[in-house]
Image 1 (cartoon, helix red, strand yellow):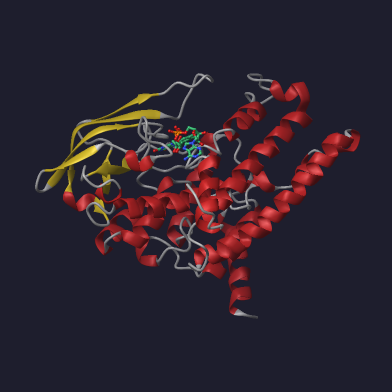
Image 2 (cartoon, rainbow, N blue to C red):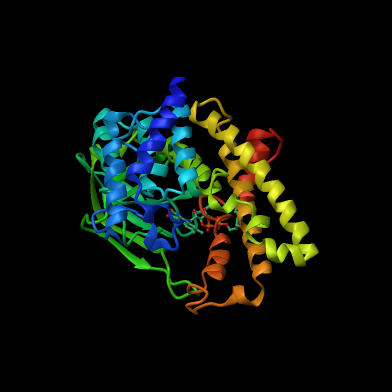
Length: 386
Ligand SMILES: Cc1cc2nc3c(=O)[nH]c(=O)nc-3n(C[C@H](O)[C@H](O)[C@H](O)COP(=O)(O)OP(=O)(O)OC[C@H]3O[C@@H](n4cnc5c(N)ncnc54)[C@H](O)[C@@H]3O)c2cc1C
């Protein structure tokens, strides 16, 4: 038996033994997702147990080094772990901006001290992070951001405002872009980390038409950020920000492995049998999803080994999010008027309609589809202009 086959056998046995049956059911809503953080309340003993078992094994971040809370798995082993988890239907033990976004940026740009400190906290799910990038008037044109950090010797004094800060109310810390030089657009931004409890930080919810909102405006009023809480060099935060965005876009694309890319024709076979037009659309979607999944696998292999085109995550984000939107359009069409139910128990609080509406944001968050296409044309296709 090869080493990898041996690893697969052991992993399968470990998962069978340690993943509670409740954690093998698909998550029904956000409450089923373990986000971690200082104030996180576990929904069940099973959720807590699953997180603790994975933390002990390094499986919340399997490919990170052991010194930073990971399991030190190779890309091939990580792939095996993921496929074995998918086979058993295991939920991710921990979902976090720390894992998907900040972690990779710290692994590349952080000091050894920062890696040991922050990455271990992320891996254990102790600190929940939010992202302070967008500002009113600075979304796609992020580099025009104005939140300013004045150099005060041992700290920066930060003043300004962020917008669309997802889960700012639940986050413990923020990774935040702050202008530290007003004379240089690109090389005048620094990437700072600070506690949301720091005096001067306040948040205000942005209400959506649905009545609730995970979005906040985040205000900084003379917030003191110690100098050692910078990632990378002073005024070179744009490099960190861009690198992090690559990981964010890869994450939002869905990587082709999530439930969103499962066969829609199989899920709605009764409708497909009686509706030829829908059946054709579903078949076309399934072919596109399969192609995307195959493409994603190649992309992920290249991404993990650092051999892919650095701008490729933009292409994956564009295709993955547009496909996800298409999938939910089809779900709504297949579900008919039933799918439009908004509040009943039968419709699980309008789960289908709410998920469909949420997918509309996929092609905006982390950079819009139009902006992704601009990047693809310039950096991958090397087309002139713009
Ligand atoms: C669900 C969700 C969660 C989010 N979470 C966060 C978060 O946690 N933290 C955070 O900092 N931000 C967050 N955002 C904000 C997000 O990053 C911005 O919405 C996004 O970057 C677009 O910026 P904008 O909304 O200012 O739109 P704009 O930049 O004003 O764009 C408006 C329209 O113009 C188009 N456009 C703009 N420039 C160009 C161009 N050069 N070429 C062609 N078309 C163009 C865009 O495609 C879009 O259609 C979130 C957004 C969403 C939807």
